[in-house]
View 1 (cartoon, rainbow, N blue to C red):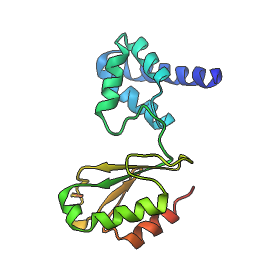
View 2 (tube, rainbow, N blue to C red; view 1 turned 120 degrees about the vertical axis):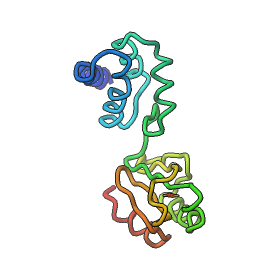
View 3 (cartoon, rainbow, N blue to C red; view 1 turned 90 degrees about the horizontal axis):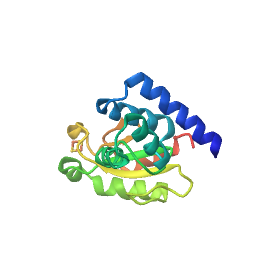
Length: 157
Ligand code: FES
């Protein structure tokens, strides 16, 4: 555990050296931690606050504001389903049911095996090809329940 904390503290120092130690560096530093560790632990938050000489509440505030940052561990695959109106009327509800069934997880939750996290998102800019979702950085469009099952089955677990 201590080794993990040491490695994390070392990485944070590297990110701070790379982006600087003023407030404008906060977001890129947090993004880097999120990218490498999939979440920003309270230890990481304290370390960032210490190195940038700001209050940990400010760090937590930024994490809470941006949906792509998280203070909790998330699944290997973060599925973000568009909940905006055009996707809604293109059949979002049945796609959503298929995702829930295929992952055994509800939206807003992470599966017990930490493979899937299910979230809603606003418009992904693919409205004419809805329903749309993202799995990590990849966008999938024109979803149907069958297509969702195929996509999820082909993921490397
Ligand atoms: S409304 Fe879903 S991608 Fe735009």
